[in-house]
Image (cartoon, rainbow, N blue to C red; front, top):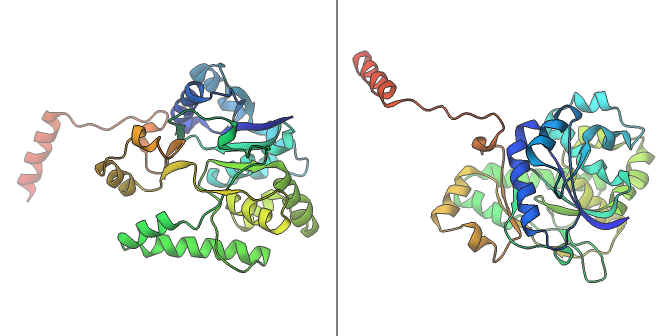
Length: 296
């Protein structure tokens, strides 16, 4: 069993993003850590044809779900994609491939060399991304977006109440993060199963897989806690991204601090598979302008 592997769950709309991620792994993966990429069975051949097999081990989402006999594939398929994908990512450990895995999203990519020491202590224990979202809270405060701070606080309190924990509110992301199979196993066996639940039920109750993992780690102390800051520079919002670029942020500069970059797929539409930018010709723009002037 590998001590650490890379894993990304993707799907057709994120094909171009997944290809970019795979290319960055081929370039910067100095220790040749195994990279697993899963997608729905219906998308598998498209992914193979586009990305190629070099440095990538392809899986079907369905075989990950099938590793847990209590999960119902149809019920999971009926969930919104933003929730169902979390279940697939959280169940990867059941395949018995590794002790730990770096869970990546398709909208991320590496910008410098990386190896085991970026994810594991010298004696092989996983680092845990753990913070208090100070950067995102500051962004919300600066732009008078009170809902950003409010949402962080509400989400933290919700999961803390589920685990009956008091104290400081922690975030355990954003992705990518290092996850241990021991933590997921303890969550399932010591928390969910005694309550007649599985991870599908957990996601129905509160759809935030990183918080389930982090709070389970704190409760059961399944592994030694070695907290680290976020591994990638994450642009949650388009305005945040544009501000950073205007301030001079680029991959070369960021590589001095971060392993990679996340450009949230929720607003980065140009990277969607099949996306076509709608462009008006000069004639069409002129014609439209004249028509509007006549109507006003």
